Image (cartoon, rainbow, N blue to C red; front, side, top):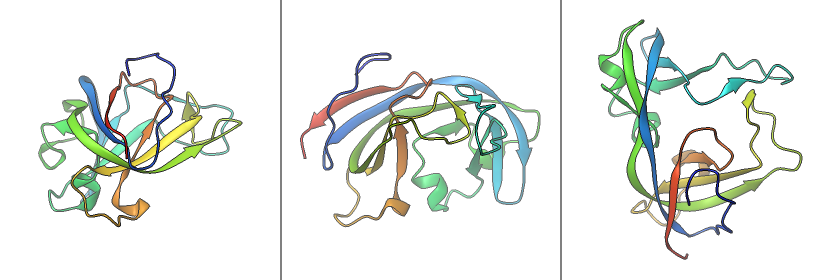
Amino acid sequence: MRENEPHQDFQVGDVLRVSCPQTRARVAHVSRFYASVEWPWAQIDPESQFRWNGQRAFAVSADSSDWTMSLFKTTPEPWNLHVGDSCLVGIPETLVRIIDIGSYDPPRDVGWLPRPHTMLVVVPADHPDAPSEDDGDTIDLDSAAPLAIELMSRG
């Protein structure tokens, strides 16, 4: 699937190859647990009931499941970032398996624009057979990020 193509009919169990080219972002905040970057692909939704701050947080521990399960990665890694730094954010080519699909009509209010219609919950393709949603990450098919998604095998 290429950017701006119609959504495929993905199914739970499908294996996908996912990637997103790295894009420059600025580090906005660093704490003991997270480094937050100004998210380059979404805009704050002024009509939202949520107050998203325009940032995405990345765990600063390489052992954290928040880091290991996140599709998006930073270069350099979050534990090497400082406030004001410039970094790259993207998805290295990754094989994932869909474990759940959320469809929303009207689109889901999440705090940013565009509001998602369809979100895939995914885990690494080689993850054990009985994952929970907490084990994975989401792919927003309506994201402004230039995602490349290719169906590799039907579940």
